[in-house]
Image (cartoon, one colour):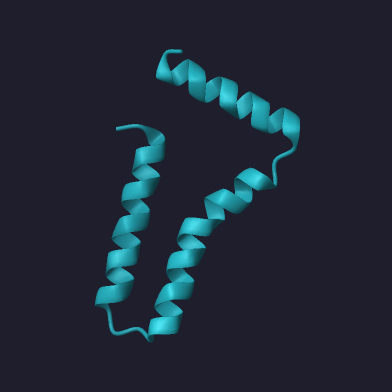
Amino acid sequence: MSPLGKYYVGAAVVAVLVFILPVPTLLAWLITLGVLGAPVVGYFMLDESQRARLKRIRRRQIGG
């Protein structure tokens, strides 16, 4: 499984647990958005050279 796939599985598990546990609905949505939004915000905080380096590394791992 790819490292990115592990993040998706982890986020899905957290989302399911939050909605199963007796947590208020608004809080459950906020937790889910936080878990899913943190990597996106982290990516956008990188400057252009760091993003380009990250893209090169991902392409190399895929084999292209």
